Length: 217
Image (cartoon, rainbow, N blue to C red; front, top):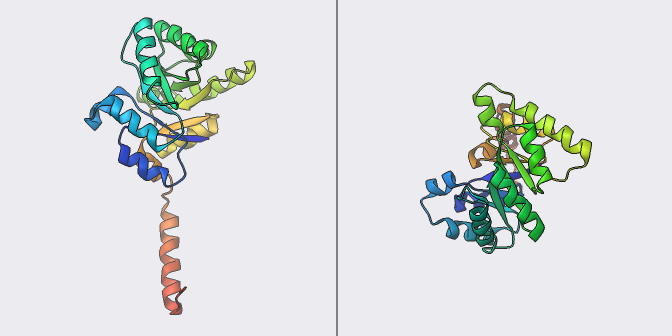
């Protein structure tokens, strides 16, 4: 499963790129607002850091507005992916971008039918929000599994991005459900390497090594 980082903080992205773990970046208006920076400037800076896909979301709600904004965003860098809402207007814009060769991420997906429409409209990616479903006591992992089954049944090429990830458990759940990608907040990515037995094991190894009185150099 690929890892995207879900943030608009450039320094966070730079730091995680050094780990070799990142396969892409997703942003949204809320994350840009939190960063307090100019939207287009942030997208350009992120795209300069990586050749991997960088999702940038439109703000318009009508098809023509989405197309105009999406084409402008795509002009920032060749790895920009235009992020569109899963509405009928968004699907029309998605079909347009498919025809002209611009990659898309259709977001705010909460049902199998929505995911099927996104794929039929030519979406490069679809983003089911599993955390928000769990918030209202629905099974986000089950949605990923169902989308995976339908896409595989019909050979649909749209990649599934498990989004609204809240915890390390969400990441493993998405992987087990067959998601192609998880887009994960930086803090959650860092927790994935944590385990108390790893920590205690390292402490024991260091103690035993110190007792030998030796040095590697």
